[in-house]
Image (tube, rainbow, N blue to C red; front, side):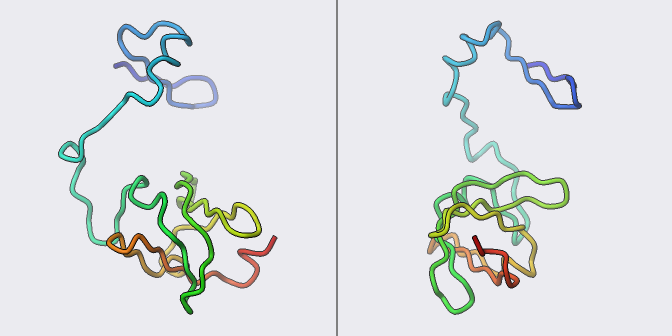
Length: 118
């Protein structure tokens, strides 16, 4: 594997033996990193794949939606939530994401007024 900075400072990754776009497309979904290869996380740190699929509720326990993915951000990452009013992006900061229970697959948020509005 080789990495280098490309145009616009994006990180480009090239795998040995994958020399064309068609080769890369055939590899889609095949990269796997075993859990034994991941670093140990500190308390209140989570892998994006652990949050995807979790239900999201507000402080009263009312359903908000489901985490679709984690979106990397410049200042902080964002939870992309599939909500009744469409996808909403919620900053992953301790004042808003107030609880994560991976056992129950639930994320509790305290959204500021207007954050979830359409």
